[in-house]
Amino acid sequence: MSTQSLDRATQWLSSGDLRPTRQRIALAEALVGDGEHRHVTAESLFERVQHQGERVSLATVYNTLRAFCEAGLMQEITVDGSKSYFDTNAHDHPHFYWEDESKVSDAAFEQLKISNLPPAPEGTEIASVDVIIRLKKTK
Image (cartoon, rainbow, N blue to C red; front, top):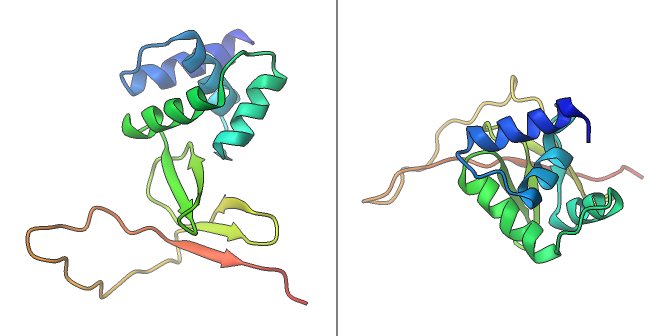
């Protein structure tokens, strides 16, 4: 752990009002320690921190990712209702889902226009609109 990546991780946790436990710091550093945004699955993050020598269970990774989302630090992207990806860029933006590679990446939002949404049912409001653009290689 470099001092800079540790500082980034600790500041990130602080911005979500989360207590900086050893496990949260380890996961936060793997997610934002280099200052870059990334998309991860719980399994890929688990493998990454295991490779770095951290002792964290997969259940802890899942629970911590949920806590990061609830704190507004990340957003969850669900693909096919069964596979979740977690994005450290918590601002609303569209995503590409690369079907052949089972990966998610950011899509440019500047050209995206969403108009004429149906009205929300009575007693509700639209909280957000998720855009996932599915890609597959051409033959």
